[in-house]
Image (tube, rainbow, N blue to C red; front, top):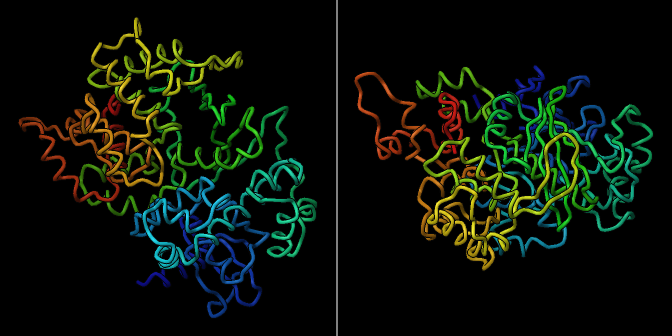
Length: 486
């Protein structure tokens, strides 16, 4: 069956599993829709399929006001076969083209701008600028529908340089001004009190929220993170200003509430939260590969919505991973909390959530003594080396870098081995193929009575059939052995 035939069947049946994986351009109306659009199904000869909303927009179609493409799960950042496109999408999602151009983006990715445009067209059907424009437009439309923010604030939050540009973009795309769209929308949207702003983050189903929340709960750094019932909360520092984010599942979405986040920083925070909870993982593609293995197929049947937990900050995760070397998850969590309390910046009273500190910055830990926090002398020196490497620029967690480059930078630091490097690449860079083959929990998962335990080299060889989704395989295997996984 061809891709076109698959899309046609999904369109006719309004299959929700394909929501966000492709878009339907209707030639008779000039509108593009999601596969789940409730409007009357157009005739096959009148539709064109597009791999992304940006591709439909670049072809001249405008978003449907009924199915609202801005509410679809994001196009999987791991889609396609190009690592360069994947890295480029992450940078665009973080606002790389808001104050820069395609040439600068290409330079960060180590390719020419012409080659970057060619790759984007081949894999996404749209140019980098079209992707950035559609992303900005959809986010602004979401804020119009879901909040009562003034239009000027929405224009700033979505990355438009001016209110005039913001208005012109909406009139050109929708044929209506932003204010007209808000008057026509749902008046029962959530209005957050005070400085809090709540937005809806759609995700790609299936989604195992309880398993993801349990993972964060076991590793939550006291004072910095908290899992309270069905909510995840943590302190954040955006441009030196402290804030708090809160995420919970509700009605088939994740609700993100931001406390103390300035308007220009709303979009980057939203994108980081999407990666933190891995909302755009292409679950069907992952299942197609991992289900071929008997052990993983069984685990996947019990947890079809497995996600790879991300990290709010790469440096924080690296410190946490070093502290957790060769000790239990619970012990590592306790020590990380002590480090945060001694060296982190207090943030004042955050209510009943138990949040009290920002995680320490590299500059502070680069000269920390780590007395009476529970780390050995050797591990304390490793932590200082990592902090100094970040301060000096020798170690970064920039999404534009190749995961292999991060691995090499980490391994070059005495006291850091392959396990730590792979774990950080898995969660901080969201490399879907990262795999710490020497992890004891992963090796134990294949134990059988009377059979010698697998060696790391054997597990590495076995995992070749799980590529490029080995990180998801690791989460499934860790889930079968509670207490494993850093």
